[in-house]
Amino acid sequence: MRQRADGATLACLYLLALLIIPARLIVAFVPITLPPAMVVALFLGVVWFSTHLMDTMSMAKGRNAVRTAIAIFLVIHLLTFARATRRYLPTDELSVADSSMIRILAMVTVAVFICDAVRGRDRLDRVLRVLTACVAVVAFVGLVQFGLGVDLASYVNLPGLRLQENAYAAFESRSIFRRPSGTVNHPIEFGLICAIAVPLAAHFLFQSRDRGVHTGRWVLVLALVGLGAILSLSRTAIIGLVVAGLVMGIMLPRRRGIPMLAFGAVFFVGASAVVPGLLGTLSGMFSNIEDDPSFQGRTKDYDGAWKEIALHPWLGRGFGTFLPSKNPILDNQYLLTMIENGYLGLCAFAGLFLVSIYAALKARSLTKDENLRGIAACLVCASLVSALGAATFDLLSFSVATGLLFVVVGASGALLRVTRAEALADPVSVPAAGRLQKMRRKQKARSGR
Image 1 (cartoon, one colour):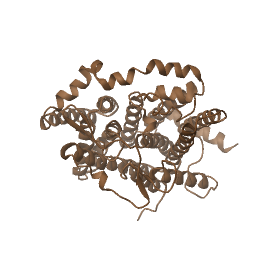
Image 2 (cartoon, rainbow, N blue to C red):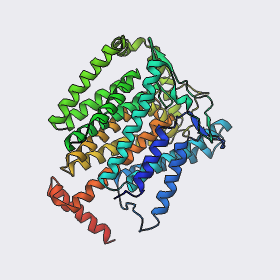
Image 3 (cartoon, one colour):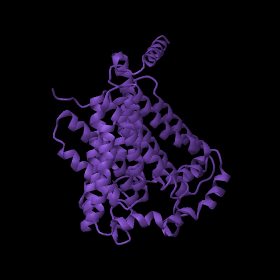
Image 4 (spheres, rainbow, N blue to C red):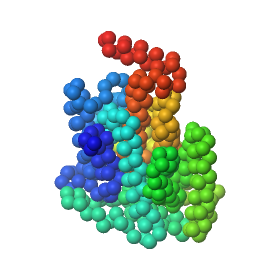
């Protein structure tokens, strides 16, 4: 029977707009920087709010740890925005603060929509498959940029969209190599999203093998995203791959974890052999890190950042008001969050990662199903890689990395809902009977209110 359009369908539409449409293209007829993906995100917010007003729509109700964390994150940003705008702000800072608040609202709605609207393991599986396939397309565009110097993204021209002013260059260089950006804004962002997709591609490869389905397409997807992460020539991506490999190796069964680590090692050696000079460039990125101008540029402004934090320690000076045109560029989202949102904002931002990891681990503990446990491991990896990435560049300043982060957070919440629903329906699937009884008591208490 043909699957009707539902929340997962709309989530996939958002992923297509986020990853396939080049990030340098924005809506032409509005005065603010508005990517097509943000338009879809705001539409998802309207759908989420509207369907929660009715009981007949397929939208999950009730508490969820992820929803709570997202609500706290939004409230802190609203408080910061209110505090910043009650005093005088220069016109340029006020304009960016307004558009940044719209962007945060759009990202929050993406996370809660996926958390509540993606119902069932098959639909969550579909969303994550589309995510992984879209990142593979981004990686392919980046590999063409790296190998041939041709930017396929520049040939995309859609009606109603224009090229963003002051956008990042399509190519950068490191050592003797071109650094690709694919359809996103920057090589670091490109490397991060490829590193996030590697565990998912490996999971779907194992899943296809276990089901006896042809695995060739997922081998190709894994090769594309893995090579994309390596050839981004980004420390963020390399560290992310190492962390993801270690986490997957620990959390997956031996029959999956050991082959995955072995495949990763062979793949890295093969890539280094095919691309002469790659291994030396990658090793030089870490061995000579203290003399690297990019690393020195990241750390030289930290003293000034702490002085700025001391001026507005609790709620910050306002999200988006620390403009790169007037202030040093801080390649550290945690420092930037402390400046713009204060210590409370930092706690709310870090809470997104922690709650996403908690939700995935909790879901993993509630099921014996190997595929759901594999998805939980992948989402833990995605959250950890994103959290590490936030320490190496200003993640929330990049639309694709930010959008993907909130997709991962929402997917963790959706996975927790799925495993809880299945555990309540099938007690045998729960590893510990005590957890099931506790869940049922909570459900009865809520229904009795």
